[in-house]
Image 1 (cartoon, rainbow, N blue to C red):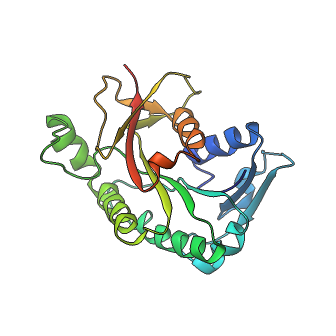
Image 2 (image 1 turned 45 degrees about the vertical axis):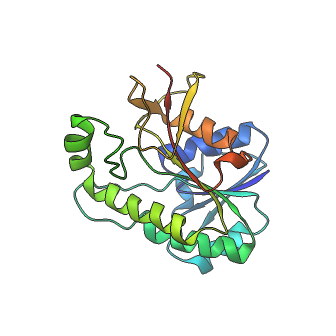
Length: 217
């Protein structure tokens, strides 16, 4: 398959790039600075510069792709951001122009508050308070897809706290429509998230769904 990856220079994006290439796929990484990926040399890998806030910039790089992956992330927990919601509008517009329907993007546990599904004191008052700025924009991004992305086969992947390290190969728990998973392990390697996302490119039961994922305890 042929994939376009937005946010490819971050830890999670790099995991998807490497695993996709290892799996025999063609990969186009859309980045601001091509020099950051100079160490990855592969016949099926292409690095292009693009503006994630511009559909016009993105569309040519989506042409002919089977799926788009978005691994954009905020560098600050203090200031308000639109790094998730604004690029998603440009990405969806570019996908429509390129006639690409499939996208998988990273979000997070605890993005929305569900009064009927309480994650507990620490998550409700401590974690959500610390991450309030990025979580607010992730909420806008998710709502945009739910409201205006019905012609797009999106899957919102919501992992817990991300850590570096190799894929564990452990079973991944999936909770469709929930904000977290009932598991004692509250962290997950970026490599495991990448493994899950790549394995579910064709999983139709996850189309137009938000999935909380975690490692089975």
